[in-house]
Amino acid sequence: MMIRRAISDFEFILLGFGNGPELDCLLFLMFLMTYIMTITGNTFIIVLVVADRSLHTPMYFFLSNLSCLDICCSSNILPRVLLSYLSGDRSISVVGCFTQYYFFGCLAAAECYLLAVMSYDRYLAVCKPLNYLFLMNHKFCLQLGAASWVSGFLSNSILTFLISDLDFCGPNEIEHFFCDSFPMMKLSCSDTHMVGLVTSFVAGVCSLPPFLLTFSSYLYIIITVMRIPSSTGRIKAFSTCSSHLLVVLLFYWSILAVYVLPHHSIQISPNKVLSVFYTIITPMLNPLIYTLRNKEVKKTLRKKASTLLGFR
Image (cartoon, rainbow, N blue to C red; front, side):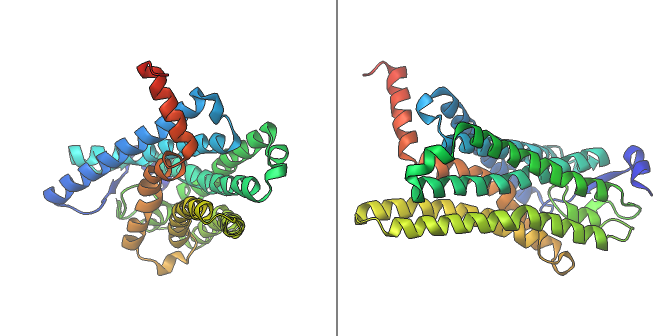
C-alpha cells in the first residue's frame, strides 16, 4: 500500500509504554505534571524576559528562544500522549503522524543549534569579556537565533519527504509513544537502508558539530573559571557551568545514541526510553537549570514581586 493511498484509508497505532490500567494511570499523572511544569516554567521565562528591560541581553534572548522551542516540542508530543491515556485510543492518522514527526525533527534540530549558540555566547562572556558586547551585538544575536530556527526546519524537511515516500503495507503498530523516523521505517515494506543512512547522516550533522562546539565552549569556560583567584567565586561559577553542561550532555547524548549510532543495531525499546530525555525531561529542566537558579532572574523576581505587592 503506497503512502499516498494510506493517507485516506490507513492509520498508525502508537503503542506507547505498554498496557495496563495501573501503569497507564501512573504515566498519565507523570506526563501531565511534567507538561504543566514545562509550559509554566518556560512561559514564565518568556514573559519575564519580555517584561523586564534589564534582561534584554544576548543570554536571555537565547534563553527565551530555548523556552519557546521547549514549549513547542512538548506541545507537539505530550498532549497527544495524554489524550491517548484518557480516551484509550492510540491511533493516529498518517497525515497527523508525519506532521508530528516533521515538527519534532525540526524543533529538535533547532534546539541542537541553539544550545551551541548559547554555549558560544557564554564562552565569549566568560573568556572574552572585553570584546563581548562588540562581538555579540544585537544584529548578530538576531542572525544566530534565526539561523538556528531556519536550519532546524530545513534539515528535517528532507527526511520527512524521504520517509513519507516509503510504502507502508504491513503492520501499523509503531513501537513508540510518538511518530519517529526509525520506528516508522520499521513498518515499511520498502527498502529503508538508504533512508536510514540519510537519517543518521542528517542527525549527525545536526547534533555532532553543535555538541562538539558546546563541549569545547564549556571546557574553555571551566578552564577560565578555575583561574579565578577567589575560591568562593570559583566554586559558584563552576556549579553554574557544571549544571548547564549536565543538561546539555543529557540532551545531546540521548540524541546521538538514538539517531547517529547504526540504526540496525539498536532495539526500539531502549530508544523509547532515551527519547524521554530529549522530548520530555530536558524541556522541563531547562527553566530550572538556566534561569531559576540565576541571580539576575531572582533579583528581577524580587523586584517584580515588590512592585506588585506595593513594597519599596
